[in-house]
Length: 311
Picture 1: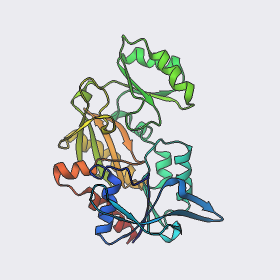
Picture 2: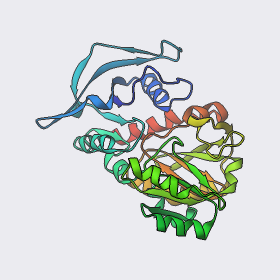
Picture 3: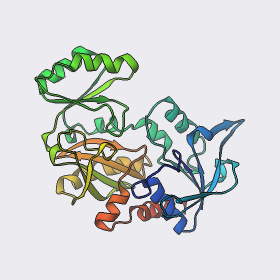
């Protein structure tokens, strides 16, 4: 197949952790042709969705992990698969790329489905499953946030469209900084905040469960550093081997059909203790760690699902 990958610059990636690199490596091993471009080079031109980029070859060699062919402008409608893999922030630039890619999908299979990526951001899709999630509020009104904190005491406050653990704060009942934090966030952003009841089980880790076409594949545990609330690997969380529990499988069984129906082939959910906190559909990670810990080739399962859909 002809496969185009829309991603952030490939040069600085960590080839031992980056999920897009592992997906590209697996595609290449399966005989697919790769084309790489950054989201800034995606365009709509007189009825055509185009991208300026390069034919791509990858190898697991640090410092020499990719080779580019001659730069070219391509019509993405000529491709079998386009990967939507740039990292958030989930801002209007990101959203615009989903609008453009939606124009070629599903004739060209865009993974994940751009319509549902746009309409299922990480911290909003969980609202469809209130019995699986901790108490949650989304608001830009300080009185509403104060009332939620009064009901639940210890809370987590974070930007609704943030990522990678950036801007995540724990506000304890004794903390007097909620108003200042609210002023800080609302001073530079028009987005609401999301507030959730703090889950003490995060000290034992924030589990990333990988699903492929709605089916649970495996999980890794991300343990926060000492003195840190956030467990994201971007901010120093330590990945550990972990097994799927009965509760994890129950959560996956509940959300799996919805993911499958929405064309969300590669998804990573976050589970703390017994509670679902996020459903990551934009650019999920964790497949390399899972492969090292459990020998599960998630990239192969993803491509098997894609190849079946194209067939």
